[in-house]
Length: 102
Image (cartoon, rainbow, N blue to C red; front, side):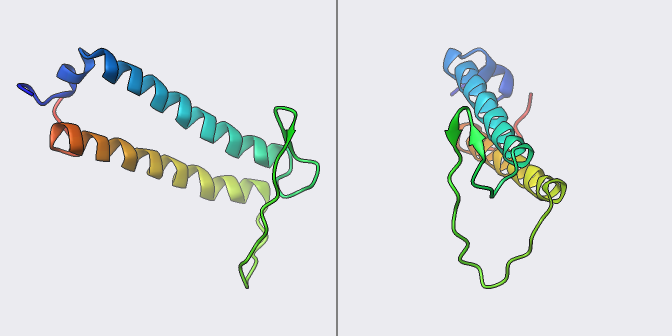
């Protein structure tokens, strides 16, 4: 690769497509997170797009009940950090730097 910048990547069709897939996945994960709180996560009547949301058993010895807003305050930053780590890893693999030049 002759030029290791984001501008160079933006000229590539596959990179633009990958950015769209990344943005859609990010918004989908955030939407499911928020909808799980709005619909009352953990209840048997939780539905998403007409399908029942599965209840996951808890294997933790200590259970700390969280309200919906507390859950969102914790989960949204975690989701953002995970997606940012994925983005930085991609830049490091493709361009050789986790914070490439524009």
